[in-house]
Length: 133
Image 1 (cartoon, one colour):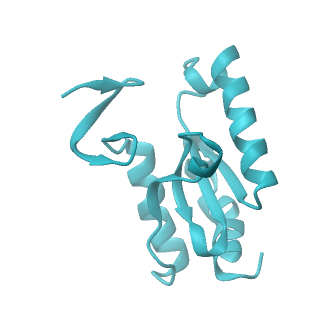
Image 2: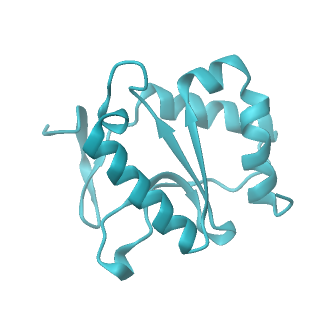
């Protein structure tokens, strides 16, 4: 298996490359969201590519395209991961700003947010997906 951004790549392809193996944070998010929503939400699209029309290969960790809602799970916050260092942070800002300009509502969540108070942080996501947010 090849490595990409520190994550192993599994054997199935998506447009533009391989699908990264899910992280613990992604699995935790999926479980907590199912519990918080009482299994009422449609399944999210994983690694959803949203900017191909403008020539970008950006993907959201989780997305509900019909609702134009996306979740980005920010790992490595306290370990100086890619998303918190100069170029990675600036690239993420460009991605999020472009997504917002395209009409997406992007929620950024960290492991600590989900550990401390998952209900507080998942409620706006759920409400947005359901059309009330």
